[in-house]
Image 1 (cartoon, rainbow, N blue to C red):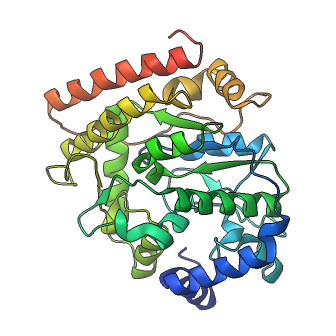
Image 2: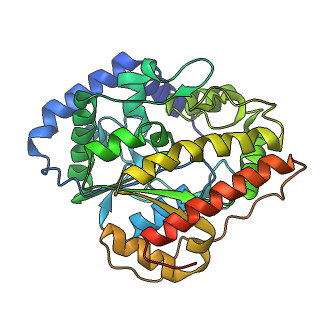
Length: 342
């Protein structure tokens, strides 16, 4: 983003800042391409969870199998018109030079890298119902909105020539119950990271993005990403988390609230699975179990690796104990769902 030209920035503002422009481009895309898209089998994979849980790495490993289409950086900024934009732009014709993404976490991307871009659909067409000034509320899209989302998936599959879709969208934890019921053939994978490490990582990213320049702030807002930094708006499952976002305790509360809310969702839905991330990154057998669950032939993982972050800072011991207990319980359920013992 820092090296975007003035033209790039203008195009992003034109495509993403104005809902009217985004809707118009999407309408043109639908009119030109929807009738010739493949039928939606529904057998897709959605990776979701709090930011910094390993969602990006898991999604990239799944995408690497070659079985899935996805939105990529080449689809920016007209992500709601992937086929139309592909005809107008040369961005996706070559991968380009890989560069580390702005998070500073060692993950390198190019124009063909899959990314969390489909939140633009939900923001453009229903953002006012769940994105507020204080935070993001639980989102319950209606049948028409979900049908429109499935049409977007079909448009992406036409462009990519694939039959199945993979998405990483952390905001989907806000609508996970609704999506899991509406898309019973899909698999929803929720990486589960140890809470102290996870909270420390969120704190570090929050501090990293506090001084983001105005364009980066706009960019994150356009994509619906408010997880941390200057544009932070928390998920509000049971009200706004208490405390200072500059402290470990705040992010432990964020972790507890999110995974406490996901607990009954996973328990009620056969197609939602917790995936203990530390085990996934260290033990190929866990990746093989995930691959089997989503219906692909596994090979040796190449993207999966331990997430290296800062050490946890001082924190409330009772909060940490509450989070660790919840993590242990949900991890056990995840291993069981994958047919694995600890």
